Amino acid sequence: MNREKIWLHGDLSESPFASLLCRIRKSRRTGCLQVKTGKMEKKIEFENGDICAVPDLINKNKFAKFLLEIKLISSSLDEKCKKHAKKNNSTYIQALHEQDALPMEKLWKLIYSFAIEDLFPLFDIAKAEYFFNSDYPLEAEQIFFSIPTLSIISEGVRQMQNFDIIEAKIPKVNKMLYLLTPDYMEQIKLNPPEKYISHLIESRKKMEDILDKSRLGKSITKKIVFLLISLGLVSSSEKTLKNLYVNKLSQAKIHKIQEVFNLKCSYIYKYISKEIGPAAFNVLEKCFKDTKSHLSPYSQDISLNNEGKFELQSALKTNRSQLEKDSQQLFLKDLNEILAAEILAVKKSLGNEHESVLVKNLEKIGI
Image (cartoon, rainbow, N blue to C red):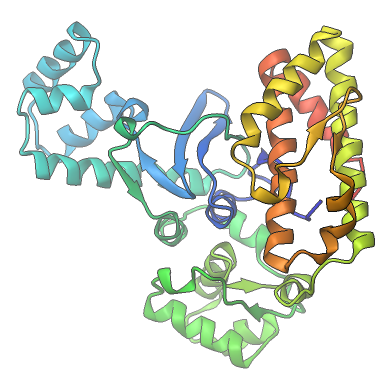
């Protein structure tokens, strides 16, 4: 499989929140990201890689406190809206609308500001479990508006206070830095200091050179480099640079990827079979059926056999290497999606502990 994890599950100690958001944006994922540490649990909805403002997920107490602190509503109006929401089994935001607490345009601007600010503390969390659930898309009526994920990454890193996260993830001084040009580059708005550091990286490649030549001071420079890396604009890995110009995969490489994919699928089937017996096949069959409609045309011939592995029609097996590079990437993404869906099926059927054990074991299989 590709070197990115086949499922979006892990810990922020390995992948900081800013980097995690960029991964979701790059792969244009739709679903719900859950971040949990201690008593804190945050859910963030995404549609096609961008963050969605969903009234049902906005914490009414925090939003009420936000409005009270900036003195836009009184405590009596706040209580009135909360009682109205409880009586009518609706959200606090819906109650604000129905009680005409604020002009609609102003209220929506406040919801937008709050939704953004409510995400900022996550950038400073050094350790927390996360899991991306792509099982179901949002209905249109659930989404108030979308927030560009790239702009959240920029603003979130700019206000970061936990410098330990930056220090832990910043490249070593002897590492070479490479400027990248992702397809979303034009959507990123860098401020003048950030543009200055990107120009330094363009002309002087090593991290120690950037720190020596920068006129912004080491701390600010490191923070900006961390931001540029988080946005996918800079990398310290030669492999990342080479991957931008990679040729089509060979037939042998495609065969190896398929082999590892099926080893993982077979392991999942055996794992879940030990827990629920023959019903395991029905669980995975339904999981695949629900996923298939979201796969590209290049994967519509895939079928599940009674060993929990997936089969391709023989003609397509031999011709995978003839696909164009973009088509190959779609095919590989499809395999990732199938594995992610199967892992989610285990989580739903057996619970979080089994899902965690499964994920750790799958990491030991193949590439």
